[in-house]
Length: 56
Image (cartoon, rainbow, N blue to C red; front, top):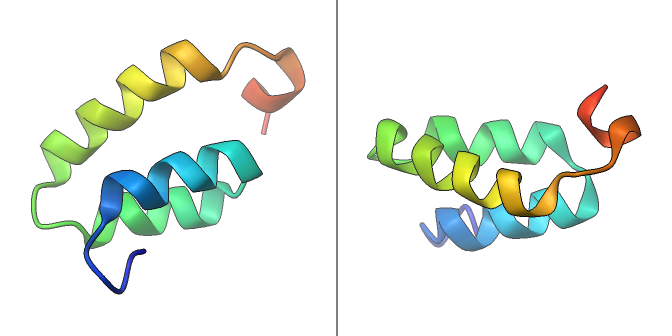
């Protein structure tokens, strides 16, 4: 997804798979880092609710 420029899709998959390294890569490689980070925050608020995930 990242190679194809589909950063939002890559971030969704990274969050579901708990791959914080890929999440960071998708954010930093996007052309619009601020917009991508804002999208990530919105998705994270609705998805990340488990305490052990937040500690990673």
